[in-house]
Length: 219
Image (cartoon, rainbow, N blue to C red):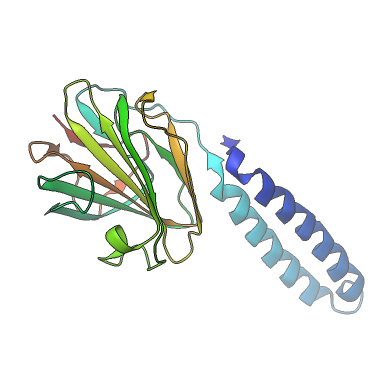
């Protein structure tokens, strides 16, 4: 397991704060109130460990399949429905939404091989990620991938109540590989996939998706 580059500043600051607070607690409490010291020190360790784990990149065997759409992120499938998209597409699409909790791996990955034909950042609100309007009203970053088959897939990285920074590495004209990094969302949110109506959906609501491994759909 490695740590993601997006965590460098956060981890450095967290390490310094953890060490400083530990030293202060030691001098203030260790000799007079050792039990309270260890309770607070344990709490600090747990928080520090959660911050470190948030930026983890686990070792995985990714699914590589030209006929498959892989999960763009880790998380729980919370929406599968036919929708009328609010951008790029004029035809109806199947939306699959994956909710990421703060405990999930937060690297976002390209669901297919293809050319990036659309890349757009949208300012917006910070509704909780499971809110029905978060797909259209929250801060988000959208990509459209044009697969070699001619099919197009749209992804939306969507901010939530805790997620305050969306990072996207793709640019229009890029030719990207399935499961390479698309970006990163800090501290919990969701990613939507908008798929052609003829895509065969392989997951159901409540399933746990593993980014780059789980096959969301096939064509």
